[in-house]
Length: 509
Ligand SMILES: Cc1cc2nc3c(=O)[nH]c(=O)nc-3n(C[C@H](O)[C@H](O)[C@H](O)COP(=O)(O)OP(=O)(O)OC[C@H]3O[C@@H](n4cnc5c(N)ncnc54)[C@H](O)[C@@H]3O)c2cc1C
Image 1 (cartoon, protein in one colour):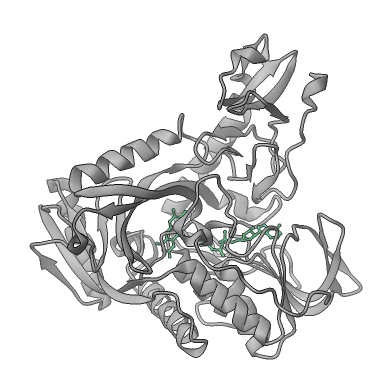
Image 2 (tube, helix red, strand yellow):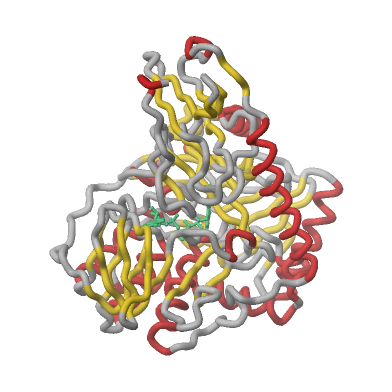
């Protein structure tokens, strides 16, 4: 299984999928773009209801963040309920909780109905503070959790070897294997007559004769009544670019010296950015998964340092035997901490639908989106429609954050054009390094591999024209503005761009 980065995630260790029987259907009721958890959930929900549905995926199933997640299942979200209540009020926050509970049930229902073997575990969560300031914050979080009606209590000891100053435990959480789960959804979808086309990068969606005409990069044309963008971030330049911001998070998987030390709960600390923990079971083996070090995409100087810091964090607290995996992945924070799920803003005929801005809770919100969007298509209405409407106007506090995010985009647009180092010869670049440089009067993204071979790309992002930055751990060119990402030779890894970086012919430089 492939992923949008150079580092391998444990979720890529799944048996090869048998491809479905249908491969040449070009005219359908609904086209779902993207085969992550959102797309596969939506496609299956629609096909179950008798819609003829196809999934177009630019790469392969789970290529995006679903293949690089940590797959905690939460009703207690990353943005604390105390903050959500402050921003949206108690009534809306109750609805948010209700929607997360609905998503948990939807996942459980799919697992049961289709007998999906995906290591699904129901468990409690724990959150802990190690400073007075964190304790004060965590007490507010506990009060909000209790106010909403989730069972929660103070505890003295954690399921990991950390002595907290203050800690709480709450019910209704879980975890699973995300790729086993969505491969299960894909199998069920195909068994019901659905078609999944991989290697199909959608570049254009146009209205022709009252229907949608969808064109892929290799020139194939599909027709549909409705299109769902299950692409994590919506392609093209549109309103959502200003309402969500891309972040990266880092994960490591460790074998511990003591087999009994793996936690039977999901855990979170209160640092900023926070760390998250769970156990991953793979056959006879168990591993500790720890994540954190989050930062805005392409805003770090050296992405590899995040793994070193995460490693220092883990080894200072756990009796580790060996590190088995490490990888990083991307998520999108919304302006007001809630996702955008519903009709594509500005397209008044309701034929195009989107789901984005899930933050670090996309297993839940992606599953919820799949069902909400299916209901919108089938019934023209759905539960939580208003709460998560992409056209909602967030609270005033979120507008301030929105302005700051977009000031940052403008800053990068200007600054990154000016701050380009000049080199006289390619020998100035060390092996294994890459940078955006001025060489022979041209601004070029140059990568030199360990053998000294050079790849050269035009570093202007194909989405909104910002200058990409080298990510030295995933070996990708990442855009600091809206999170588009490209491989060493400019191949597209992550939207919202829909075309690769232009490449330079190195012999002609
Ligand atoms: C490190 C990390 C840890 C996380 N941990 C958790 C967690 O513990 N719990 C949780 O609930 N959430 C977590 N999240 C968030 C969650 O993983 C994501 O929100 C979720 O996986 C998004 O799923 P998706 O299907 O919407 O998008 P993706 O999985 O990214 O899938 C989108 C797909 O669309 C395809 N695509 C994009 N553009 C096009 C196009 N133009 N044409 C065709 N195909 C296209 C891509 O190739 C991709 O396969 C985490 C995120 C990160 C980064």
